[in-house]
Amino acid sequence: MRITLLDRVREQLMSGALKGLLSNYSTISKTLVDKTREREKALRLADYTCYSRFFLHPTPTDKVILFFHGFTAVPQQFVPIGEAFFQAGYNVLIPRLPGHGLAGNWDKKNPPPLPQNRVTYQEFGLEWLDRARFFGEKIVVGGLSGGSTLAAWLTLECPDKIDSGLIFAPYLSNTNKLVDLVVRLFNFYFEWKTPPGAVNYGYEGFYMPALRLFLDMGDEVLARAKSIPAAPMLIVSSECDRAVGRREPQKLFKVAVKLQPKCRYINFEKALNIPHNMMTKEEGNESQDLVISLALDYVANC
Image 1: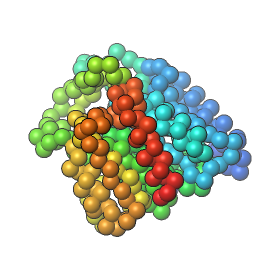
Image 2: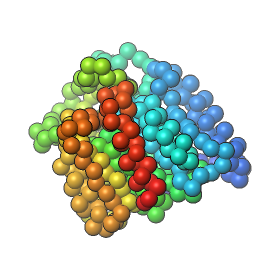
Image 3: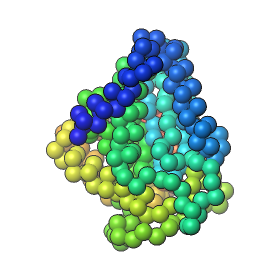
């Protein structure tokens, strides 16, 4: 599967106008930004927070960071940590996930057009992984929740192409087995409950099949980690996370570290009050800077 998907994506990227631009970094950078913005404007996104974000230096950097935002969320979720990595000397790519950030009156009768097949996300991840190689000698992938599950999948799918992974609150399971069962068996519409004073970046609701695929991808990640050496991963969870369980992230670390000793695991204690959406203060994490500093340290020393 790895060779088939990656070869197909690379062939698409190398075709046409882009093929003749590979030797010119500034042109490649401008082309990527302009073409992405052109496509996203044609889609009619909800607002500025939904557009893919790029923090690029005038030349390729030693490491380039590729972030995937959370399920139903938008790229704005990774702007604070993206800016921090940029200031530390890294190029940063934060693409908008397929089907996310679109304008519309979304509700139970008119749900947002989220992908229903995990291959859609996996091909998307491989596509951006291939693009990222033009912006740095080494590639770091990262994400939150469903985006983190995708990043973890990439560390196992392409460990030879990835320097390290930043796996924040990966969606490998819910807070208990009963909720896992509900996600797997039922197809109802679910609406997020945003804490008072916090911002919800992205869609307010979704039908279960759109979430279920990440649970399936998580099963694949856990199974493959037992026999395939992953790229080094920093796996992060929190005692105050009410969206995903801590059991499976711990399990992922325990199996991954046996084959990849550079893996690390951090679990934030309750006293820190770090929620599932831990990437920004706007989403309710007053300890945003702690999360960022731990990520910077891991990438610098991995």
